[in-house]
Amino acid sequence: MGLSEKLEVAVRDIENQFYLDDDFLIKASDFFEKSMKQGLAASKPSKECMPMIPTYVTSLPTGKEKGLYLAADLGGTNFRVCSVDLKGDHTFDLKQSKYKIPSELMHGKKADELFHYLATKINDFLCEHHQETTQKNGKTLKLGFTFSFPVEQTALDKGTLLRWTKSFDIPDTVGRDVVQLLQANLTVLEANVKVVALANDTVGTLLSRAYANNPEYTHANTVIGLILGTGTNGAYYATIDDIPKLKGVPEGTKGMVINTEWGSFDNTLEILPDTIFDQIVDSETTNKGYHMFEKRVSGLFLGEILRVALLDMFEKGLIFQDLYKARGGSLPHRLVEPWLLDSEVLSYIQIDDSTNLKMSELILQNTLRLPTNEDERIVIQRLTRAISKRASQLAAIPIASIVRVVKEQWKGDNRDLEIGCDGSVIEFYPGFRDAIMKSFNVIDPLKGSNKKVHLKIAKDGSGVGAALVAATTE
Ligand code: BGC
Image 1 (tube, helix red, strand yellow):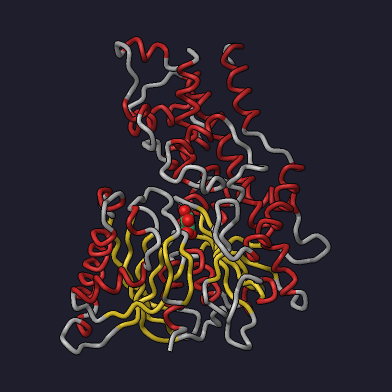
Image 2 (image 1 turned 180 degrees about the horizontal axis):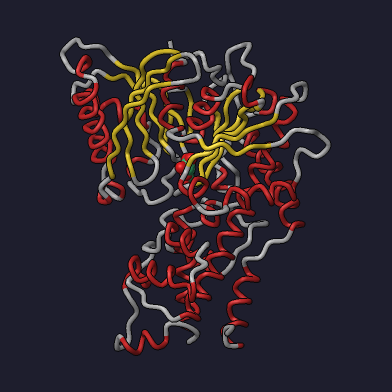
């Protein structure tokens, strides 16, 4: 039995709002390339412009780098501290600890509250794994700090926060140097650590994949570092002539890794789709009007878009009506409250092929305390698929556009191109990578060449990458 006509019409209407055709993808990719150029030329960051931040990383690793380095990684919901022993043969040994950041520190009043917490965790890690550093006059370790928010970098170890994204909002940090904040708090604890480099997680992922990749065996060169998890972003190596805004680099510098901050692609919504659901989600965020691309693509937002669409259907009297009555005029609070529908839930619903969608019934019951009838589950699955399909199509746009730009650098080399990827959505969301590649092939940036592009998961990329950035310092 299908849905009632009324429900079918309503679902189809929402599916249509999330539909993107091939022409859109091609146009959007041209527009992305134009936005990259604008961002690389603009000397001041602005809302209209994709940040395209020079990172002061001027070359990619060869796989021969050696030594013991620390890395600290602040990006999503966890803070990770690791030590990386680079072996010089594309391999490394890794020790790491992960700490869930207390949510009150993510929205605190003072930057030092958060940075003191981070420094304490680094110190705890040293006490547990590297006692040789903890005595007075002990060995000082160099640390690469992965800080996955838009930062205006002025040197490898200097960068001021432009704005918070994802779930962070500590206003007094904006405009301050995050390396100094971390170093000052480490110094208070007398930790033998020197913060020598700042890296975005995408830069870390690019570097760690480039280190692990041996092109002799994979027949591919690593060209992009991509994150698609809570947030989304990418980094790539640009030749110096392509970065007009970069002034005063040492003679002989051939190029630099650029942190695109593609989450802020098309903040002014010239071409991005903008459904009423996207508008509601944006209105609930602390960085309204910014990172508009990210808000359509990454894990933090997919569940929220679905939640908002379901509430809209409820308000139109189409779903959850019996439930509402049975509860005496209310809906489960986890459905009503923003941000509680995790995109992991969508990843199960996406591929549920059980009879009557029984698996989804259980998952919705367990995660949202939401009882559903079969029609409601059909609706939820169709909307989930429409939202995730649009996200995968959109995710292909920056990848294809950057590939079109960097393919010039590899003209004389017949190996394939590969993209180091990290993040829960790209790693775990069923079918997401295949769906991205489908749209990538529609845009077809490698037209006329025999090269192919491979998406490679670079596990722990950002930590190892930060260590690699630290390894480039004297
Ligand atoms: C941040 C980026 C980061 C990305 C993935 C975005 O919200 O602005 O700096 O790379 O999330 O973590």
